[in-house]
Each structure stands twice: as C-alpha cells, then as structure tokens.
Image (cartoon, rainbow, N blue to C red; front, side):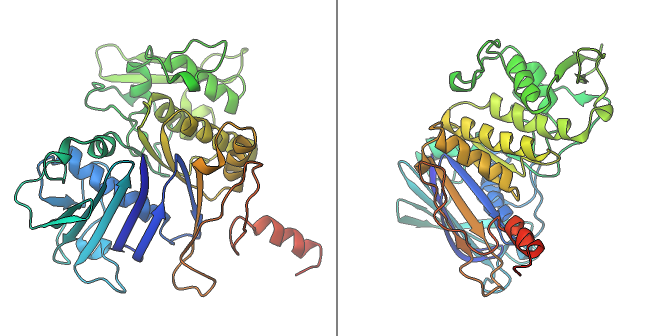
Length: 377
C-alpha cells in the first residue's frame, strides 16, 4: 500500500507531504491541488505503461495530457525542476525531473531509493534502477486505475477490446462496458460479494447498480461481426431494456466506478474523481459507503469529491465497523492564495464516525446556508 506521497514544485505545490490510507478522501476548493495529487501518480503510471525503459517522465499519453513542463512546474517557486516521492510499506522512492519549459517530457535527473540518491541514471526500468523496477510499487502503479470526472456519456455502442490491451475501465470509463462483458464470469473479491447474488463480475455489478438505481437490470450484447457491444438498461420489471440515452445520465456515470471497483484485485490502486457525479444525495452516500467497502476488501482507494454525502457514507461505514477509523484519511485543500490556514488540513475520524475538526470551508456550506435563513449571519 502507498502510505505517503510527497511533491515538490509540482503544479500548485511548493512542498506537499500527504499521508495515504486504504481509503483517502481529497476535498476542498476548486483549483486547490486535489487533482494534482492524482496526476502525479498518473504520470508515473503512464510512463511505466507506455515507455517501460524510458529515462523521461511522459507528460502526454493515452491516460492524461498535461501539456508542457511549464504546465506542471510550480509557477510561483519552481523553475525547471519538480520532484515526486512515494512511500510504501517496504521502501521509499523519489524522483527529480527536469526539463525546458516548452518540452513535453521531463528528464529523470535523479532517483532515490530509501534515501540513496543516484544522479543522471543510464538505465531505468519502470523509472527505477534494478532490481526495484520489478518491485511491488511499480507493479501497483502499472495496474493503477484512474477515472476522471469527465466520463463517457451514453452511447449507442461501446468498444470491445482484448482484455489484455484494456484491463481497466479507462480514464473516461470508455472501456467499462468492454471490461464488464469480457470479464463477466470473473469472480469478484470475496469481501465485496453481495449475498444471494452469483459472485461473478457481471451479476455483482448489476446488483450494485440496482442498489443505486432500484430495478436496474443490465443487458450487454456483442454486435455481430464487430468489435463492439451494446448496453441495454432496464429500470423496471414492466419494461424492455432501454438504450443508455433514455435511462438518465447517472447510470452511465456510476457504471464505470462500479465496474472499476469490482474488477480490482487486492492491493490494486483506484484513483476516482467525483464518484458521485449525477447521483442524487442518497446515491452519493451509498457511493461513499461502497468506496469504504472496496477499501476494506484490500483495494487502495483515493477519491476526490465535493460531496458531503460521500463523506458521510464513509463515516457511516466507519461507525458500522466496516472500515477501521485509522484506515480512512481526510484531506482538505485550500488555495495557497488564501490566508484562511495551511494549504492542506487533515481532520480525523474516530470509531464512532465523528470528525475531530471542521476547518472553515470543509463541507460547511449547508450550515452556513441554514444559519443565513435563521438570521444568524
């Protein structure tokens, strides 16, 4: 498991030292750095997957496109260098990257393993010197699933690809239906199996979708003589399957999240932006609870959210004893241009689901609005 990520001169951070847990929730103002934390991990993942023997960090690829060095270097304090350091249960790995401001990739100028620095490396595998290039951390980063908030909407049909080429749902969820269809008979993690439902990926995904959308039934069929599948969705026993365009946006936005989680193996890493997109408040709380279930099954989950309902779903899971309070980390981000406090604050949850501190701006808008109506502001 990743236990910490440190960033230096990356995006909006001069320095950041962020603890990670089995379930980590990133919240806060827009443009305060939440996505930047995920992007640092995604850049490592992208480089390892697309350029295994590279001596450069690839800023643009199939998973994410961040532009030039000028776009990823801290524009206030940085010049042409940034750093990423990851801690796991066994080792600590750190990289320093440099490049001209207009370049679209960055050279690996140094690699540190457990504090021992090697400069200007000649050979790297998965951005690490041997034998670390085949270790657990690069394996986890290569298998990482990253799902952005800008997910694919309803389509007439979806790409069907070889599962070895598209083992994850894709950054926009574009392969979610393909992953569901190809792995329909695969068994999900035992701790995530709903009772009285076959333990296969397809039936478990369908059952989880039915929790969010009562009556939901999925129909996935391959298009004859084409590398494509269609998705039909029934929302009532009294109707036939509808095309996705007729079933509400929330279903197609939640489906990639559910498929990604139930396709994961133990020790996998999921990064999900706004899992609550287009869900009503009760559905958002259920999604938070589900994320806690996934983390309790041994999959490390990092989510970015603006929803207090998602957070409260996690709190309920903690109070139920489903997830240990120490296994949930909350981080609240502020823009560094404000004077309200440090750039990141980290409230804690106790076993009863209570939070020890509520920084200004931390899911407090409902209270502010109610105080306004009560005449207290």
